[in-house]
Amino acid sequence: MVPEMGAGWCPPGMLGVGIGGSAEKAMLLAKKSLMDPIDIGELLARGAKSQLEELRLEIYQRVNALGIGAQGLGGLTTVLDVKVLDYPTHAASLPVAVIPNCAATRHIHFTLDGSVRRCSSRPISICGRKCNGRRTRAPGECRSMG
Image (cartoon, helix red, strand yellow):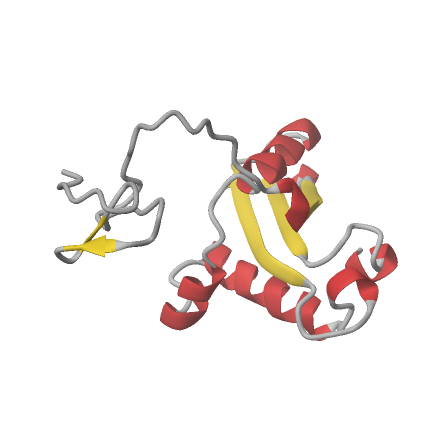
């Protein structure tokens, strides 16, 4: 499927794969899988621990081996990550759905309102300056970020 799409899906991007359920469920699973964070680097580093992770790695390696590259101009990276979700189904009707997703569609919306939130255990920075080893909210402001 990917070789026929060529650059039509705007690589490099992600592939969402849904397996099982009904045809509709497989498509919803593929779509939902694309909302997961990109973590193929971690998976490559630690190795597969399940059949789904093995499938992710196999698809990832085979698609990148095609050499389609960014915008179809050739290169090593055609897919940034492959996500696979599955659902129980009858063996006679194993539906599979694949959704290619351009990397440009992954974005975030936020409002700059002066509040500061943590997304991880690391201090966050708006201005990038450090004060007493901690990042500050604004230049010259030196207060704990909690």
